[in-house]
Length: 86
Image (cartoon, rainbow, N blue to C red):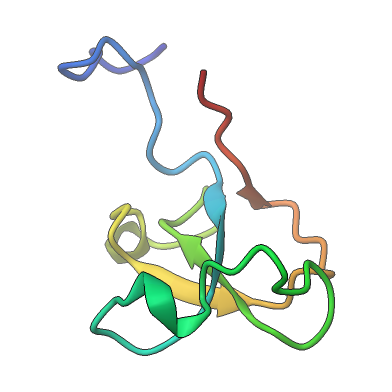
């Protein structure tokens, strides 16, 4: 709550943690039919999952929510989290 809220009324959302995404990393252009969103895709294993944005441990250029990188889903990194939406 140290910054002013954005248009949706949220405070300080960028830079806390990078966010896990459910999709398997595949090259662009995006196509949901290529298996990246398949429910049968393994949650653990060698399939890299997309991670969006940056965290407190990253430099400013990585804080953009459009920034995408990847990580093994079984790896635990304290600056990668998830956003819960209702």
